[in-house]
Length: 267
Image (cartoon, rainbow, N blue to C red):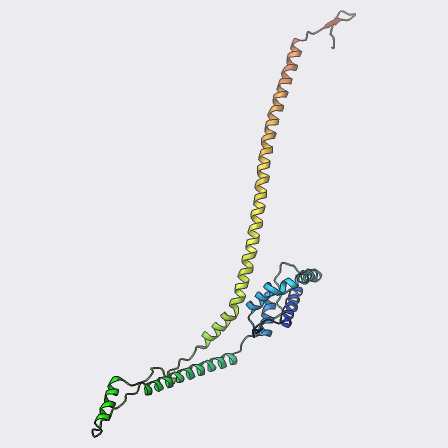
């Protein structure tokens, strides 16, 4: 079976797993780990991230959870806030001015060599391809050998010469390299931020639903309490009226003491 040259080996997967776990354990980010592995294996950080999420992570899920616990314990021991900015363990090498100038010079040489090859191919094609007028002149010379006819061939130029090779702008090359390196990282950051916002939105929706249910329940309880209060007030008013009526209907009794004074008899 033919094996692809860019296939992942077990050593590559092991290096990827060890690097990611080390970054997570020491408070760095997985994106920073992907950059480090990508530079070591000559791959892009996006390819390393895809390999981690698709294959390697499932084999090291328990180790990843343990690394996250160790990171929390480490942060607590150091007295750091868990919500703070994570430190990056790996800084990718930044191309120097000499490297960019060498890249610009090599690119210009490659463009010049390509244009020279194009020019040579056009001249070769011109020597082998003749026009219909030249064919007629050749036939005429073969038919009448005594007549000397000289045909001056007009050289064909391609319009693109080595002296007119365009040179790349240094700032454009630097900007292109920076954008090319940061594009996968920015994409991963945006994806992570999008997932985080989705989770927060789902949590807020769930909390909002719970609060709406509680509010509805409180409104129902308030209505029931209002009805019970009105019923209780009606009962109290009726009882008060009955007591007043009984006091009005009950006759007052008096008795006379030895001195002839009247005293109210308590019932």
